[in-house]
Image (cartoon, rainbow over all chains, first blue to last red; front, side, top):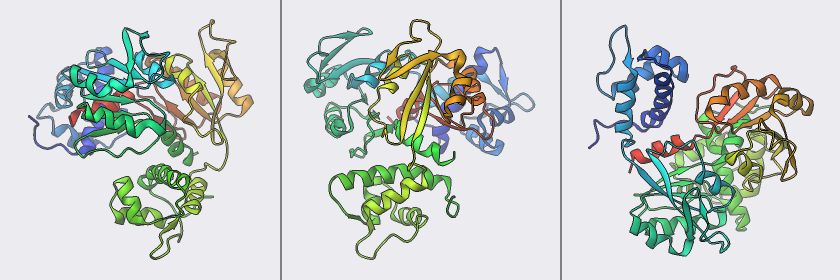
Length: 205
Length: 205
């Protein structure tokens, strides 16, 4: 059950607060003020206070927020207090990098299945995950009840793969293919578009 | 020289228009209406018309926009009508995937230098690029006049690497390390944070 409706802009910033809190916790900091947040995250402090107001009344005057409590609250809000199994389609360069990627918090996100169409890859084991035939992906992810899919195939196959994943019951997709996907409305999409990031970046140079 | 000031939200959407236009051009479409754009990109059509108004008066009543002309105009605005050499630091899983990544348009973006601290990688050639010693990165990128850097090292080394790149004259950074970087104000940063994307995604599932 969700709390009072949190705007998308705030949700999008929650992972940043979390990253900042995790760093502070690692450094042994027990509290953080909203001013400190706003400096570290480059946000204005009114915005920070408004964002934090959605998480309940955690702030203490002159002390700020308890780092551990706030981090735990944000994890609960974002549904990060559970394990998300992920199915990866496309075990090329990017795909195999993701299979061995050390940036995921494996208590939360783990690639548990991998698929490709290349017969030389099918049957191989990468970091404990056996590569399966992509033609079986819909059935297999339904069997394993996997709800998150990662698309790391070339742009030309991405739409077809997305449809196979959705057919298998996936409700969230992380797409690395530089193409626009046409998806049912109840499927959530996140796009990691490296070229787009570069294109936005060089405008300002 | 820039045209009349284009808001950041519009700039951020330009790569999406471009992606859409490139697809249409490939399919032989010569024109696109703003309604068609808004359907394909899931934006409201007033927003699309407003975005497009910054590119000059390209639209024709009943016909829409000429795909090739508009794509070329957007490329000019985004500074994509030149070649951007990039220096990659960190030739681990993600880094080596980027070296061989086929999603870049190599007429625009090319990784021309790569650096690592691992002696077993230094001197190796990957996709035509020789891996160099990271301790030389500031001098080497200054020599080669590289202005774009990609950080693909673990979070714990990212800040140090960023500083070395900035010292060498880089003004734009694409960071794959899941950490917040503290940079001079004149350095542009784009962050590819895979975990953040996943965290934002699962909130809605």
